Length: 231
Image (cartoon, rainbow, N blue to C red; front, side, top):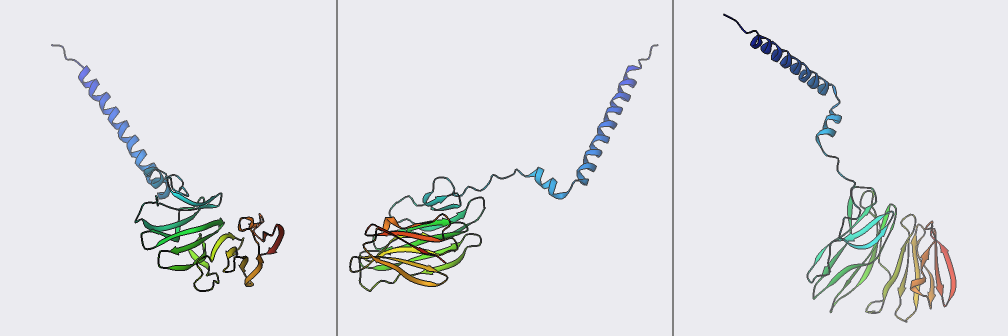
């Protein structure tokens, strides 16, 4: 009687394959155990994309290479929420103002600016029976700390008095124009030396500008150019 040897050969061959597979698996486990924990975590989790500053489909108050000031408002009646600032390339945002749209009161940011790492927001409040002086606030977007908060000096009961433009200096300094009760316009600054009125007269609020360094403010009074340093 003939006895086939092929089943035995097949058994040996399969055994060899299983042994090799087991050794390879042990090697993989050993190699994986020897890899740093941080490297193992990196392979388990998908790398998240860089944070978008601002996120998509936001209402923008200010946008520059330094970052953005934005909110999610759409202009609908009854909307309210926070206005945020963020620095480009970072993963953090901080509230710099608020908005509210109702029949009794409206809140919003009229002027906003960025100069890394600072953000400026001019918060306004108004309504049929109230008139609140706007406030100009500067925040450090590295940590959310409030650096400066200024309330322009207006006489009481002056509905036409308002901040008509505002600029942010290099160190969180401020310069703005304000409409006065007598119809004139003032240029005011706040820096390390305190608050000071730089000029008053027939000033064009749209002419207010800063140098590229943010250290000098410029404006036109009756068409004549003026400037002052922000310290």
